[in-house]
Length: 471
Image (cartoon, rainbow, N blue to C red; front, side, top):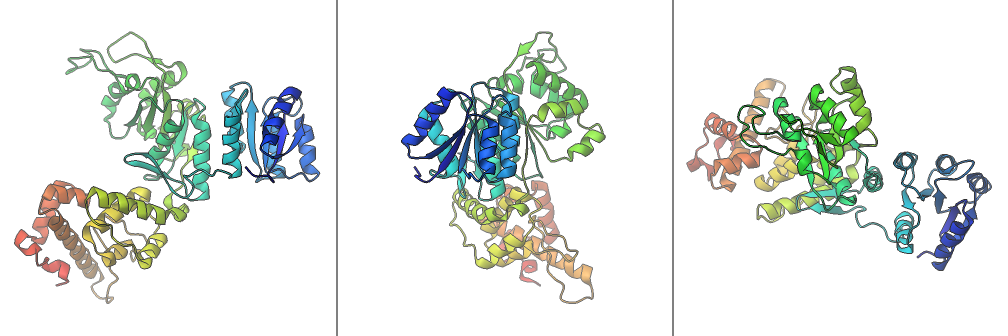
């Protein structure tokens, strides 16, 4: 524990003030106390600069929320932990929005207080900072940038408040990962987590997928089947691409949010469930509301708390960590030695805008590992001649050697790159075309078409196809 850390303790109950002060002074913290919000603000205005403020939520006069807001204006960087003897979800969420770093419900044990102080003052920094935090075998969270550390902190806070959370961000930014993080940090962590992609399930099947059906509810329904909400009772459900849900079904979901009950298709019986709902989307919310694609009442119900996940181009500090982690995972998955990442490649990755975000970065590493050609990989990341960035999707754009025949040159370069990538993938999979298609991230039919298009034959692959040799 730090001997120099200064803590301002604000509480209107004299007994609680003495109790917490004693706990803090045992660990040699320098403790300043105030019995009202007004007194605390006056002390700070006169020059007090605490490292941490422990602030009671419910106080007469200026309450904890008002005090928090003014404290953040006086000292924007000060860390504040809210204290409350009641579990008022609305006030806790408001405190998080105003910048509170954590909260404790009174009465609390010394170990709980120590853990919160350690996290806030850095005496026992969380091991996720700057590193990979494994959530499961195939899910991980990286918080190497200030914006993602803030999201990690907010996720940890809101995890303990049983309210819906809306996750916004571009495709591939990691909204599902944040949802899993919230679930694992919540009291429901030992219960079921399920994801339903509302865009991937046909609209006429989505209702039965979510709420189940009884036998005879529709043609082919020979046996009753529980829906995802029943399967996820006491757990957490992520409704991905919520903006793609049909408006009629949005109304039913709204009732589930309000009443925690629903009926299966073909049944009049009411089923009660206790499910925490998280929702994610990459759509423009205001535009979706204006176009009636998303019900306004459902949006406000889901929007109890919102986390905006930034695109990868806004957190480039994480790219080196992600490259290393993806390479490690892919090399283990494909039983191959990890490939080196030269400074030239690293710089190319840092310069790239990654429109596909983490998903694109993952595919980039997968392709580099399979093809083993650093020069080709770097070329794939270079901007096209029209100024747009190239996706790592099996095509490439080489600069033309002359102005004449520009379209022809571009087409030839594309064909060379595609043929070379396909040949390499086929060799790596011993000509197992289904595995090669999976590695190339294209359909099996598309691969067969391109094999015929470029005239790639197994007998030629050992000497490499002539297109990939530049002929």
